Length: 101
Figure 1 (cartoon, rainbow, N blue to C red):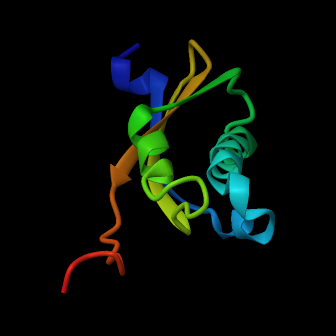
Figure 2 (cartoon, rainbow, N blue to C red):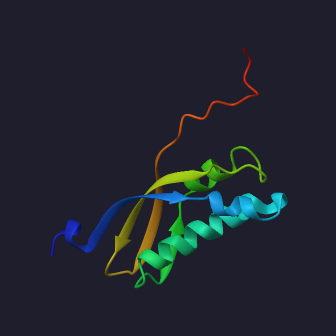
Figure 3 (cartoon, helix red, strand yellow):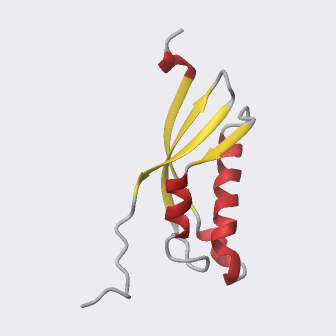
């Protein structure tokens, strides 16, 4: 069996707007849990979910209180090892009000 036959790749846009409903102080924490829950729902046979440091840093880049509203990720699911890896596809161009004019 070829290497590509074992690994399923797909691109997902995960909406994170739901984390804004709760307390402000732990939104980024809940965003990471929501990403893990989303992958578990779409890849039910995955026994382990690994979120890359790039995705984690992207969610946490504007502190704990202001995670992005959505994140575009690539999910690579290895059928033999039953591991789903979540990788960042692209960073959104976020215009910050803190930038100098």
